[in-house]
Image (tube, rainbow, N blue to C red; front, side, top):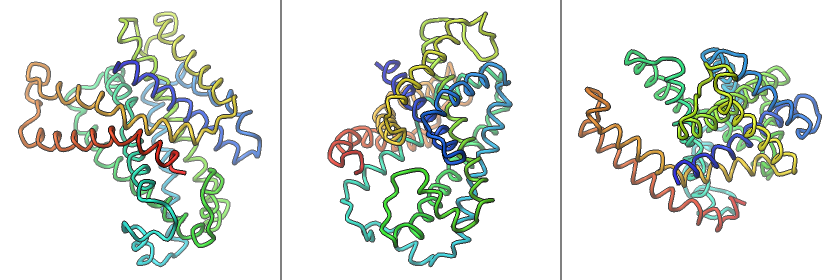
Amino acid sequence: MNLGASFMINLMTLTAEIGGVALALQLVSSVSYLLWVPFAALAVWLVIWRVKFSVMENVAGLVGLCLIGFAVALFLLNPDWSELGRQAVPGASTGTEKVSTYWFYAVALFGAAMTPYEVFFFSSGAVEEGWTVKDLARSRANVLVGFPLGGLLSLAIAGCAAVVLLPQFISVTALSQVMLPVAMAGGKVLLALIIVGIVAATAGAALETTLSAGYTIAQFLGWPWGKFRPPAQAARFHLLMIICLIVGIGTLMTGVDPIQVTEISVVFSAVALPLTYLPILIVANDPEYMGEHVNGQALNGTALIYLVIILAAALAAIPLLIITGAGR
C-alpha cells in the first residue's frame, strides 16, 4: 500500500511539474502550454540521461534562487507593511472565504512541503553521490536554510498578490496573473528573472520526481537502478522513467489544468505523509542501523509531536478537499 500510494502521488506530482514547465514557457513564448508539454518531458529525459547527478541537482537549485525576485518585487511595491501584517492575521480576511478554505490551503501547503518523492529522491541520491557521515552537516544546512527560504518566498508571492491584485478584487486562477505584480514592480528584467526561476524550480522538481518513479519500483523489485548506470545496464529502471513521462504527457494533453493537478497531488501528499514519515522514524530509532546517530529522547519527543500533526493533516485532507471543492 505504501509503495502504490507513494508511486501514484509521485506520478501526479511529475505530471504537475511538467505542466508547470510548459506553463512557464508559455509566458515567454505566448505559445499554448500544450505544445510545450512534449518538449518539456523530452528535456527532462535528456538531462537525466546525459547530465551528471551533482550538476543536475546544483544547477536547478542555484538557478531556482531567481525566485528571490518575488521578495524584491514586494519591497519595490512599497506596501503598507502594517496593513499587510494585519491581513496575515487569522480572522482579518476581507474576502468571503470560509474558515475551511484556509484550512484546506494550510493542509495543501503542508503536503507540498513534504511530498513523498523527496524521501525516495534524497535517500537514493545519497547513494548515487556516495554520501558519508561528513555530508550530514551539509544536508542539515540545506533543510534549515532551504525550507525557511521557501516559506519566505511563498509569503512574498502572497504579499505581491495582496498588494496589487486584492484591492482590484482579482482572484488568482492562472500563473500569468501571479506575474502581474512582478511586472508592475520591476519591469521586464525582474519578470524575465523570475520566469527563469520558475522554469528551473519546476524542471528541477520534474527531474526529481522522474528519478523517484524509477527508484521506488526498481528498488522494490530488486532491479539494477541508478542514474550512474547507463540505460544498457539498468534498462528497466530507465524504461520505467520513460513510461512515467509518457503517462504525464498523455494526462496533460487531455487538457486537464496543471494547477488543478498540482492542488490534488499536494493534498494526497498530505494523506500519504504518515506512510513515509513513520518508517523513517522507526529506522531513526534503530541503533543497529543508525549507530551513534540514533534518535535521542528530546528528538523523539519533537518527532512524536510532529507525527500527531501529520496524522491530523492526513485525516483532514480529503474531507477538506470535498467540503471546499479543492479550495474554490
